[in-house]
Image 1: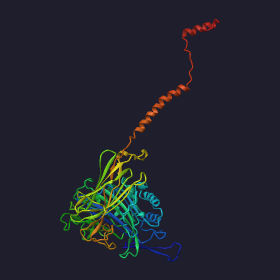
Image 2 (image 1 turned 30 degrees about the vertical axis):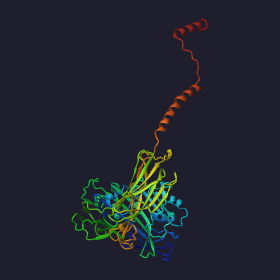
Image 3 (image 1 turned 90 degrees about the horizontal axis):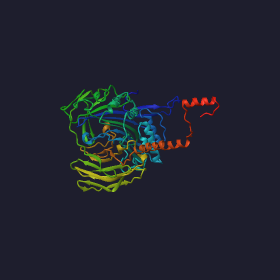
Length: 565
């Protein structure tokens, strides 16, 4: 392993050359960190982030063949499909915003994929389809089920998170699979993308048995170009792998007042990843400045402050090159109430019509702020767009921007985007009625009575911040506070996902074909079988056998020359 430096540098030369002529320098950097935050509900929130930065260019026709820290499989995907940004997540469970607060990197239940392509791509839809098939093989997921019926082209949402001034939404594609099940087969290829795998560093704690025995689990991969300096004269490619998990210590038979790394992950940390320039653990101690409520063991003198989601938090920092935290006594502390959260549900009775309700909460006491709502509805739920209503505090709330793309049966879903202003301390309700369609019998899932899933709504907003946000994205700061770019000190970007919907459709009686087949087979066997026997069987008259007396009499008559009886 190379020595640990801030930026790992190596030289690559032609193997046939005796002199280092044409050698080029590769600048790479790898960082890893773990954030542990005791939640108000008594659960434990653990967030892993692994960041790989590579100073290279995939877009100018350069054939990159030498990979050290950046995974080759993803580098080839960027080069072949001309990807400018790629964001993919796999989530099991639903993030409870009012109980747990805001996550560092939000994600909806199931699988989510959104990609920005380069403007050099001529056929975006064909490239998108091929890309989903390749990613399906890389992550062992069902991304190959993404097609035109669940793919969106948003007009205002999902702006690029990396550098780049072009925002032509023709090169953006977004899709979700809300029913995707996340399991070990998805975690294993995700861990193999790390430079040290799961053999060293923080990735040692990623034991599937413990991760999937939790209340919430989410793993994601984000690829984007980032600036190297404040003037952004040169750029690099950033690969950020994030894994968020919420442990319910009651279900694992542990006490709410004591936890440790071994109790949560069944493993301990021994060393940092040799390829990492930084490997740290952050423990949120904002509500315990004088160690009056809980105590960390072993103690650390290192403290760090960071502005996270509009709030200044204090963390105890453990450097893996020095020491590792062992255990902690943590009671439930106070939680800052989220300023923005949302929920969604379906109302109605019967299997013909229904209504979708989306509620958006602004908990700020005196400030209003705009939100951008993106809603995707499958084609088999036919929306009555004239019934769309937006109500805030009992009054109509007219959107300042609205974009609606109607669906086409078996071709594309509904797309609804609205820019709304949420009044302070209010609940804004968006309702729209729909009618259920009757599918073909081949279009039903193997368990149609379970219902059909509708993806989560996406709410994006610049939420007012209680402290000044840091706008210098190139300065040294923890990974968990530098994912979303910030251009204003008075607000921070937040993305909120609602619950996925489970809708029942008119379902035929799939046992009726079985009954018809059984009845038909019985009629054919009885009726046709009897007729066939009558038509093909030959009948002959057979005389009955004579008795013993008659046979003796015939013998005597033959002896006398008399004809037999």
